[in-house]
Image (tube, rainbow, N blue to C red; front, side, top):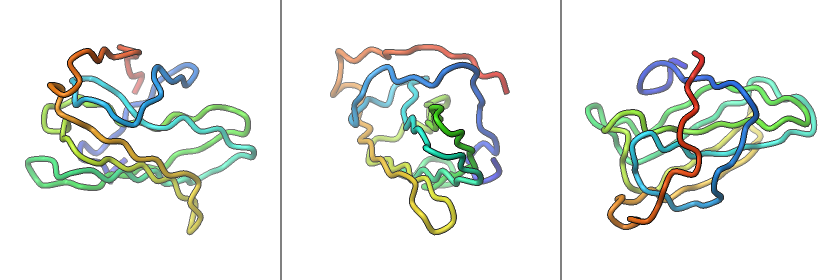
Length: 130
């Protein structure tokens, strides 16, 4: 994924799941958030674009990668706060497109963890396989 800040994305094994349905979340280390979508038909070459507030050091505000959706299976596309500079409060937007067609859009408000002190990560953990 050359159009990401790190130049790659992690892939995870297993069923895509949702630990908590919310669009407001704290900027906590290793917290993952995003969209699980089910397609009626197979979809290839779907571009996932994530826009967000500027990240240091380069002021990155947009990252994207290409995904595939298999008919009848959940496809998870998410962002995980692996590095301190990624944990930027503000509006984060996921848009999946295939050519000129929007497949889905979703927005999340990332806030300072002090504003959500009782929040606990509902699904800590999966270890990436690549």
